[in-house]
Length: 212
Image 1 (cartoon, one colour):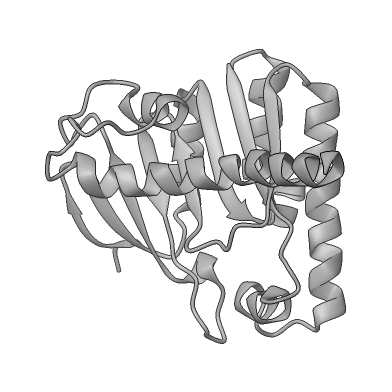
Image 2 (image 1 turned 180 degrees about the vertical axis):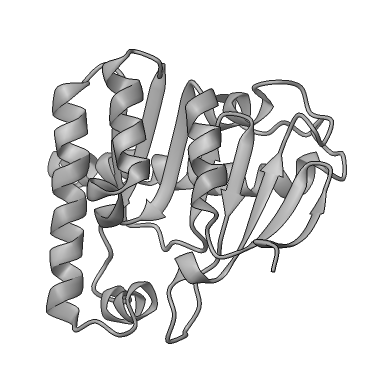
């Protein structure tokens, strides 16, 4: 059986996260944004090893890691979505492993790694790898998001200019980006921007409370 449901120019629908395709994209990209809640799996797998290698070889200009710090209102429920067969204390250890991995990369490569914490409720795992976008989904299921359906978009093959996705991440999606391709892909990029902006917003609120 093929590892994907269908493949059209610029779009592939995969059974589970296609690690080979992800590694290929990481090898080619110089700017990466990861919005996937926790990264404990990356600490000792091929994805994490390749990211570290590219950082050590100065092949990445920017790596943004958006790590989740869930609020009490939905923390336990989301833990059962992330790891449905795992007790809550063990899920918390995964969070700790993820925090440690992210912090180590930030310490080793402070000018390249942009580490952001967010309390914004994640709606789907999003991996923005240069001109490629990998999108999964969360679900109340006995299996994890990595085992679900994933869509891989190749922005250039879909007719967008090189670096469009990264430019949108840094500067926002403008109203002019209203093509049938730009609108849905822009929504995923905006989700990443919202998560990154969440920390800034919360810090402003906290600072305002301190002043008053």
